[in-house]
Image 1 (cartoon, rainbow, N blue to C red):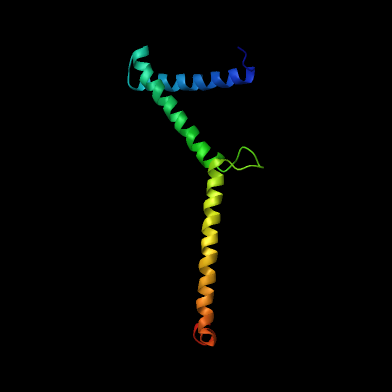
Image 2: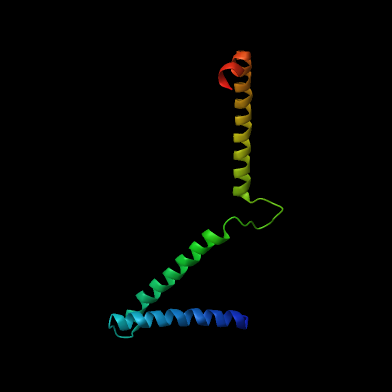
Length: 112
């Protein structure tokens, strides 16, 4: 198995950061540095980092598609739904225009 040096360094920095936070919490709570005490704190820090990552993906990365030339399944469904809504609105507008035309000159006199 091979990993790039940049990746290894990044992972090392992340783990060092988590380790530092866990030891700070252990010191604050005056707990002994054991696996039993550190594991819940470690999991809490990882959960916080994961939540931040998910939040970042939702805020910053949403809206980008895999291919600029194709829509994914959900985008296709959204497009089809919006097109159906457009067609229905167009039909409703045409029907409303016919009703207004039946009023003839009264539309200009009383509505404009």
